[in-house]
Amino acid sequence: MPLLECRGLTRNFGALVAVDAVDLTVEPGEIRAVIGPNGAGKSTFFNLINGMLRPTAGSVLFDGKDITGLAAHRIARHGISRTFQLTHLMPDLTARENVRLAALASSPGRWRIVGGADILERAGEAADRAMERLRLAPFASMKANELSHGDQRLLEVAMALAQNARLLLLDEPTQGLSIEETERAVQILREMLNGEDLTVMLVEHDMEVVFKLADRITVLHRGQVIADGEPEEVRQNAEVQNAYLGGFD
Amino acid sequence: MRARGLFILVIAAAAAAGFGMPHLLPGYLVNILTEALIFGLFAMSLDLMIGYTRLESFGHAAAYGLGAYASALLLLSFDIPMLIVIPMAAIITGVVAMPIAWVCTRSTGISFAMLTLAFAQLFYASVYQFKDFSGGSDGIAGIARRAGPFGIDFFQTKIGYFYLVLIILILSFLFCRSLVASPFGQVLAGIRENEVKTRTLGYNTRAYRMVIVVLAYAFGGLAGALYAPLAGFASPELFFWRMSGMVLIMVIIGGRGTLVGPILGGAVFLFLEHELSALPMVRELWPLIFGSIFIAVILFAPQGLWGLFRSWREKRRIGVVSKPQSDAPHAAS
Ligand SMILES: Nc1ncnc2c1ncn2[C@@H]1O[C@H](COP(=O)(O)OP(=O)(O)OP(=O)(O)O)[C@@H](O)[C@H]1O
Ligand SMILES: [Mg+2]
Image (cartoon, rainbow over all chains, first blue to last red):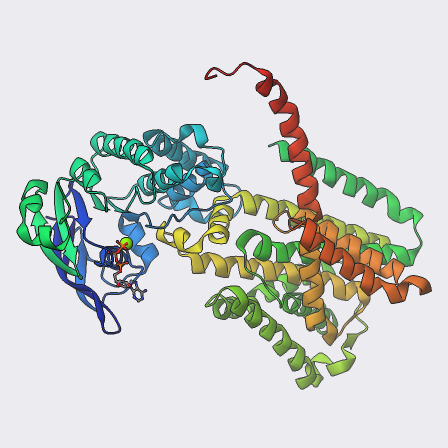
């Protein structure tokens, strides 16, 4: 059974059809890249999956359950975590507190109103493991907004990882990074993906990054899927060449 | 952890001052000190919303007034001991706050502030509307500090009542301090810093906001419930926006998000206002002085006076620790 299945997923903004009848399935363990030019609807597509936006039509099945239109926090609790294209952190909390809050979300003790040091301790240990994976351990006690931009991007990935989700949605994890920073981030992300049995959907602009990380690629153009397949197939697809990869190679 | 020593010191100092002083002071001064502590408790309750959750309320007087009227009416209408009435009034305030919290947390930011203000003004107007029940503009007078249970009558005296307020303040502070450090408190911090992100982590942030509003009203109600038997009356002014503004300013001057700052801010400024405005020379100038302090704090110490003090201590501590480090030879260089 696919882990994620979108059927005819559609979202209109007034006259604009940002996501247009998208059918897509993601199998467990897959690393799926979603690519497409600016404004293709990639972020909107993520917003529909994680409940930030309600679809105009269509449905989302996660692990066989219909999660269409559920509130964002409920979908997160079903096991979908996400990062944002524009970094979303708790700026005044330490890096570790950020990740700990993500880890705490799956703990039944998250409603403890007094005490609960042991619950936080356990969440903190999970946070340390996630930060270790993204090589953020040295920055644990720094405030999130004091980290470099590149480490802030990775910190958000560490939070998504610490949520213990079954599907990670990463919206342009290397957005705004320099060439060196991108290289380092890709290296770290690749280690993370190889080290664990994760299912990931990844929006990415940088084709190098996509071909290094993804098992399978979906190409969106004006809200529609115009190609879907192994990286090599997609690279050769003429329509994709025209729409997007014009300058590639 | 390092904060713990200081907190204990503060509590010890407050307790020592509290337990020694009243016996040496004239009665009216004991009453003013008592009121100052009550106002400190009131300001601390608002800090839960403003400092820890970034829910700016312009209508926290609603909590104070509700607590005061609840304890006044309970004491006058039923034969219940004061020590039971006070927590009851706090709980009643919390229960009344539930629908308020439900409505107000539908929005955030300035509309949240306006909704809280609207509820406070609604209560203010209701006091005039339901005169038979509330005494209208005259308020409710003749509230007695009733003895009991078990024949405990120590708290009826001025000094006894001071101790009662001090004990309740310390217990409330310890509770709130534990609350802001708990898992729940961490989620509040997440909401304060980035609510959208906190929601996508899997937290029902609105539910958390509702709970903290109810708790903040309950503690504000506790302060009000302590005020009525102290003053012997409850008046509509307790609901008035001026009260909401005062307590908001106390929280900001004292230092939002610190609990201690608002307690000290509330207590010290209420005390100063009482004392200084009694001097004919200063009375005219007091609002000016107060306003200037407020402006200075906003401009130069946005974290409030306690925040300023804390970061000064932090700097000193880091200064001491990092000195030897920076002298050590750098492996990379
Ligand atoms: N909340 C919104 N209201 C109105 N229009 C929106 C909204 N969000 C997105 N859009 C529009 O929908 C289209 C798709 O936007 P989206 O952000 O999903 O694209 P994207 O593929 O993520 O682009 P980019 O590569 O620039 O991040 C764009 O035309 C955008 O202007
Ligand atoms: Mg986007």
